[in-house]
Amino acid sequence: MSAWGLFSSFLVFLLGAAISLSIRRRFNLSLSRCFTLYIWHSAFCLVYARYVISYGGDAANYYQFSLNGMPSFGLGTDAVVFFTYFLSTGFSLSFLGVSLVFNLFGFLGLLAFDGSLREATVDKSKSIRILATVLVFLPSVSYWSSGIGKDSLSFCAAGLALWAALDLRRRWLIVAFSILIMLLVRPHMAGILALALAGAFIFKTGVSLFQRFSLGILAFSAALLLVPLGLNYAGVEDGAGPAEIIEFVEKRQNYNQDGGGAVQISQMSLPVKMFTYLFRPTILEIRNLFSLAASVDNLILLLLVFAGSFALVKRSSHFVRSTHNRHFLWIYVFLSWILLSMTTANLGIALRQKWMFVPMLIFLLISVVGRPGKRITPSSRKLGQPNV
Image (cartoon, rainbow, N blue to C red; front, side, top):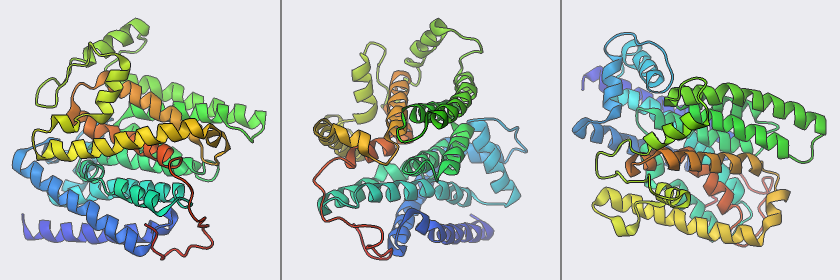
């Protein structure tokens, strides 16, 4: 790496720290909490960059493609290469420097995720707040969202959408921004976000019928534009009917069968596909250090799903009474989970892409588990006061 490459990377790191610390209050995070999260997430950026340089990967390809001249703009991979071009060529950033820029987007999603979990557990016992912290610091959360690629941007969009859902009435610009980011890298997921938003307005209580109808129509119109765009991006031709879409899904179940993460899902039932997508590899499938880390993360998530599902059955009224827009989150979670589990036949890909909806699932479950502890109101809790 040249002297400028090293120096510019350090400048990007400092700029990212300054931006992060300046917006931390929007997510109700203390200075120490924000700084610790930034160092943690950036450390995984270095690990990710080192791994890609040593063994290759999509991030290295994106950077190399960006050096071949001005690319044409498009969605998905083209959008990543287009953005990388301006960083690598326009600002002469090295691979590490560009990685740190993408790291900042992933970290923004992590800030929103952490802020959302802290709001969900503010009146919970200390053990539940510790669990929320453990979930934020899971290695897979920061590793996949710290490098050059679609995952850092899609995780940013997911985190912001979750944060916006806690108060859609005041944060509608944030959810619109999250849909835009998701549209750039994964248009089909942007369509699901729009569908979930439309469903949220239809089922939302406490607003007039006229507002519910008008906002629902607006969100549904956006979904009508985004869903066909997402299907076209995924490879479904315009005007395709149900038969063509089913045929496409069946073909997708046989894609990405190379490598140790490949699984045969075409003969699985839908519940088994959903379990495979979210919770495998399990601790019974550990083969190396990487699968060990992934299986531990999956085990924690599986235990949370069991505990949260049990709590939901006992406290079904909490779903209705909550001020958070849970309809939006549940619709997005289940539509995403079903779609991705039906079209992803590689556990390595699933480990990365499930973080487009798992933050919402974690929030929904952890907000209902455990018994409330001593109530901590925003006015009684100083921003700089530690809150595990």
